[in-house]
Image (cartoon, rainbow, N blue to C red; front, side):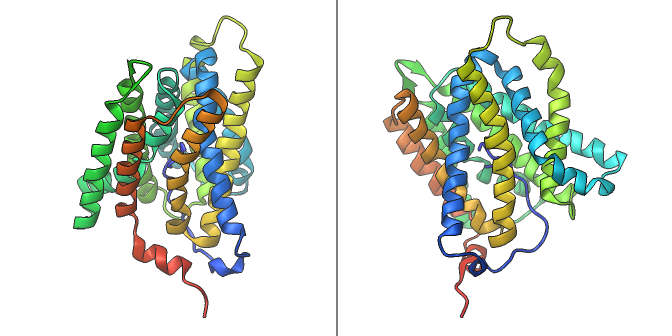
Length: 313
């Protein structure tokens, strides 16, 4: 998410030996997932101006939950009323509000701004765990947090065509903060539940929450076909299918290695925006990317990552 635009959804269950898959499959799927989540910022950039934030997010939430609904149906016996109330709260924090913030930012700045800001979700997850749940943090990870937040400041200082991008950068950073909160809540409140079913449930709850706002702000003029296409792709491919692919990766290679997709999302976000819309990578965006992704690297649990990719002997 979180990463892509990807909300943080810690996974339950064990991972298989990564050598069980062919050597090319995992890199190919990571590349594909990074490309899909990077494209989500392009689709928002194109469609948000015609839909508006709430309407576009409603299309995304509804279609994304629809794709993942079979996972929820399979695990439906595990979801009681009390759990649904918890899921509703997490869905608002981890999906509804962040998606709206990214869509709002997409109307005001190049797609790359949101894609780069989205990478800070990894650092916010660590920061929230430190402040609210008392998890320890190493000096290396503290340095990563500092580098990442300096990167956010650099990103916010930039301009595009003479217009400051700080409102969009701030919106994306706030969305990533909410991903960090949501990820910690899922990790602690929804232990033992199938992650794909949890994602379907939280997306559905977020859709219900957002629906009145979407209806109240639905455009009075016809929405162009291109924007509809982008909205549909955003929901079906960038949310539903991408989440399913992410869970498939985690189940096979483990969460640490799957989380390396975080490095690919900003790169693809900038690339697609350049190819489709001619939006360049500015100097401040490049500097911010280096600082933020460097901070993400320092926050990775590299010892776990190395164990997950160690070749079988």
